[in-house]
Image 1 (cartoon, rainbow, N blue to C red):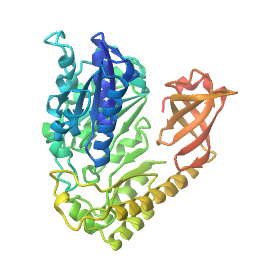
Image 2: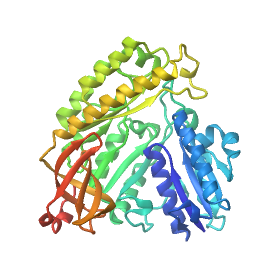
Image 3: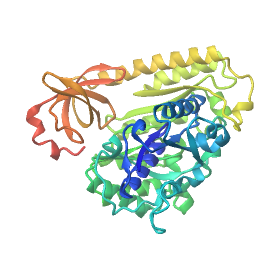
Image 4: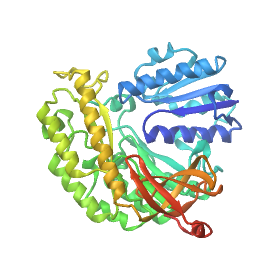
Length: 440
């Protein structure tokens, strides 16, 4: 069977779809790069915003037009929250909620042995190759579900409470990625900072990261989003090991304490500022990124101005900006007043513009510096070689021209040309021969 897999949303969704691809490939099925060539299309959906749900509907219709004969399987948060709505989309043959997502491989192929591993308990002796489904970074799902009750978020409803994978299982999976040639893994979860609590390990994430640094050979370990209140004292000491990459995504959501209280966020401007200062003092060259919501219910002009000032002061390296969209079943959807669409759009635009200025300023700090870059894909050809895209250890997107064999390699790159979306790099060909020794 030819199967095309696509995902929308967070890194956890990416981890899930990549794990599914490896399982299906191991069962003898072909992973199709194009939905038009597939017998089955699997779309892992997101519902965190109304736009994400709209993207899922549009993609489903596009897949159905491109391949009317294909069986379309929708799963993920949007499929869980609105199963009847997605089942009515053209071409949809199955809707699988998050609770049953683990069984999708066997749902598609009932001939799999009864003891065959399921999605979230994938065996680790399986052979994989770096770059499966087009990636050089492996996304590792270490936990699912969320114990937070943020008033705007539908994820807890869609995913349920936090459930962690056993530490030894995650360590073994990461080591299998390293053995397969992956240079980098990204630890992901809905509520990553809660890892281990349901297993009776309150310092679970620290223990997990320490174990991965001690017991695996993977060159680069990156963390996905961490809630600021989940960072335990001394956690940043782990970054004394250079394999743990200097990039943190700490969602702020608002720079106004009054809005944060309405959001039920367990932090304040002062607490977040102190945490950012602590992280930057402990982690050289840290790239600190965040999420922000524009136009949360009741947000006044004064409160929005507080957000702008806070973001400016904290000088994030990257902003992920969202206009607030009411999600069914959440407390914020019932709050008033709801901010008019044009106001939300204008405020989001101001935050995006500020984010672009801050990103450019952060990148400018590295003009003329040399940093290691993991090359992920070639996007075209130039007279002197291929045009490559990759990321530095501190998550700066770099484009450079180099030879054809850079895929999944880490090389030192001299950086220049700072822009909001990244930098230009210059590869010294003399460094290429020794680049395999450059592991971070």
